[in-house]
Length: 337
Image (cartoon, rainbow, N blue to C red; front, side, top):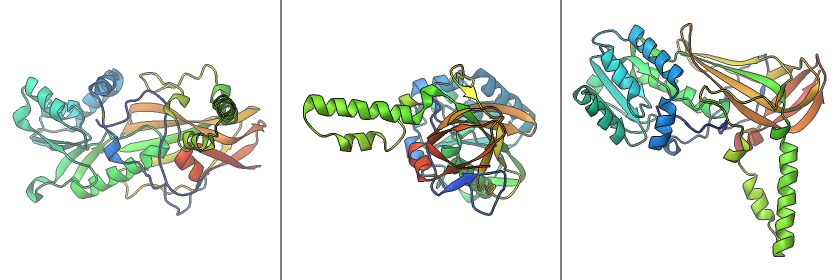
């Protein structure tokens, strides 16, 4: 599974202005700028991912219930080959694992478990790989390719639709076959963007004073994109430690992606209704991966509000996601009613 195994709630992609709202329009869910060539994992990251026992064992249960003897299976983003090996155990006749990362470890584990002759591993970008015509149709596509937040996973959603269109047999299925996103308003002092910027400016000013040089270019460079240590840590179950945060709203549905339908949903924006007064300075996102009625995994991430505001209980606030969100993870409050 080639996904981001870093245990920080770090989002990272997209490319056109979007305002979330309950009302949907014909404007597409964002184009992502995430580059799959960057999604390479170390053995330690693979181990960390495998230690998500509940998610992995849920997937094993789904594989056992879904894959029939003789089935052809594509494991997209196969990582160390865990799901591919379980597919063989479930009776699959042919399993192809594809990953942009090196698959030497996957091949070794397949050999250790006596499955090397029944598994084919292909090192290729999932966006443009191909297979011989007589071997490019699959009954099941295992697509655990998600990066666990809306900014990065727009591109992954498009990837799964592309894999489905190119390789899925009639009557076949994709796992997961549904992805849902929710957003909550939050007051989180430790995640306040304005406070963080003030500290940065103070550090730069101190640097300039001590070194008798200008460092404005450095200041602009370090604020050009999110920095990993700025994100809150999440646990192995994908949950953020919200003990220092105060939630100001119930979860608002953002998108419900159904791979049984044609194409990703169109979303124009989200209106968040505050259930409590407070300083709205952070969005807490939730992503849920489903197969039919079975929840595979739920994960939380954050975005920061560039213009934090005191909100009133019962008021509704519109959040805009523009270029700043794409590049720096900064959302903007634009309207209250």
